[in-house]
Image (cartoon, rainbow, N blue to C red; front, side, top):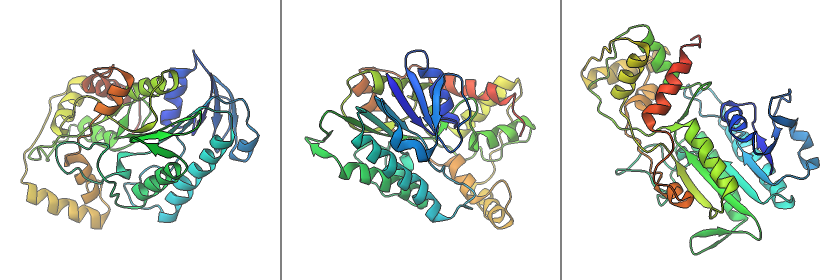
Length: 319
């Protein structure tokens, strides 16, 4: 199968290439177009309309959530919404039969109400990142028919994936920040926060994309997460175990730590209110719908296995 992957040089795109290259012919679409092992050719965005013979499209390209809040809001809509419109319009005119759009759980909710975030929740995104993602989703849905709760299109299948925090070798994000703190042997002062949070191992993500491409899965919106949710305290213990260190978890008063984070926001310190929220909030995402669609009971990689693989990859990184 000929597969076009947008944002192919990014973290997820690079992992998808490793996962798909043995069974499919891969093409890329990106702002840069150097040669990449396993990729037949990478096109620039200006060349999109001339690309032919594609069977499936995986749309990854987008602007990631900026936890420092330094990005201009319109930039999110120009990239996350604008590029999605462009790629989806191309898909509708092309011979491609499958379209996989990478949205985000942040297109649904900035925080989870109840036990788990499911596909039935009415989207109420907060901030330009989530708002630009839901705008892209809505554009796709406007082009489709919905019959009996399923997306319908003549001879084509469309999937909207909403992964929670993706991690794996080569990624950058809050896990890297947490690792850098633990690596230095610094005590973790947020042990008093007992939270549960879902993550997405990039290996499980690649498995799901493989399934959507190769199986007959109903079109629709699917959340993506590992099977198990973990607490930040558990993450720290796993990091220490992988590094052969003793975990230093302090249970400092929650109120005091929130005041410190507020000061960190004012002074632009590493621990600010945004990062405190990301590291301590409950955000559990259900993956039951995608597992039913793929006909599986469990994801191939457990949350702990995926996390340990990511942590081991950090040992070769400089922070």
